Length: 331
Image (cartoon, rainbow, N blue to C red; front, top):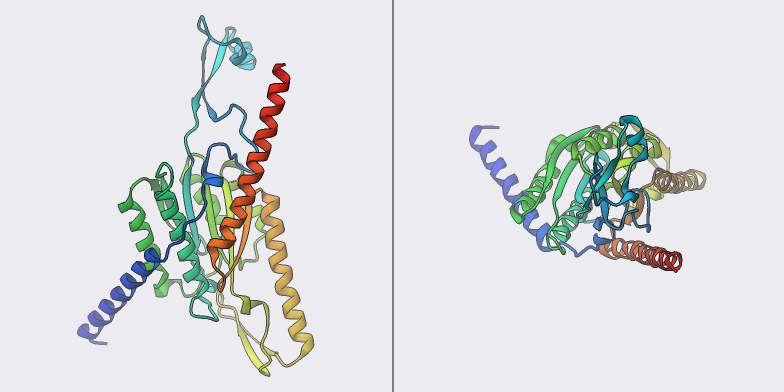
């Protein structure tokens, strides 16, 4: 390819990416992320308010006249031979991160949109919902495949939000992400450290990985609130009856020849796909993450907001019960 042809191809790709970026922003859905981003929602603690009613521990200092004796830290006081009290600060809304799987398998799509297309649209909707939310919270982003490929720290502002969405779109069209395995464990470990302070992490992936998901997520769930969003293409769960055909692993490039006209083969394939989906959900919940399953052909905002509604209802119910119990104790 000549230099002129290469420049023209590059220009066409950039124009395509910019058009896709504008379409993604224009088509973004309003998502109820407040169910997770409010301080009353604690890591791995769906529906329960953190002790302290919206405050978090800051430090220990020496006791001063007028301090509340209930805040004395007796363990520290015993070690240092004096009275020390715990200091608390008001807990602010949590940072929000979107982590998007760009491994090879996400480029599959049986319809007009690939899994990656839908993942980018979900991530953009989370970012813009956070930007336009009650406090316009701090938002960050990560892209991962076999490991964490890109990290953008959480900040406020529309320019920052748009920059993240533009990068997602441009990188999503890159040839460098056409293959490569899904490395959830390594990616989540690095993301949990990079994020620093306690955050809400919306992890969007097809979970086409051989890793034990519970182990991969457990470390991140111990410090952060993780919402696992699995995106699948419905046609991945069934085989069409087309005779002998090669099935290709989009992450490794490996192929296997199967007889798709065999009822036994199709039933076995469908059963294996169902078990993979069930195991992913069970392991995510066991690790302490929330779990939402979304098909590429369905309106993702409906599935997302339906689940968020159940979280918000459980939080309100448990919070109300806690307040009632506190009133009874005061009596």
